[in-house]
Length: 42
Image (cartoon, rainbow, N blue to C red; front, top):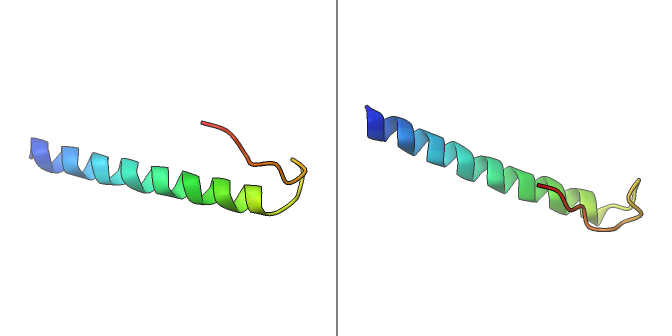
């Protein structure tokens, strides 16, 4: 039970990291409020 929960948390964390990178790439690709500069945030 414990290890299963841990695996789920790790998978979720990996997904969130991937999603955040994807959003960052999309935001930096299109010129907008930031003047087209790469979006840097954590």
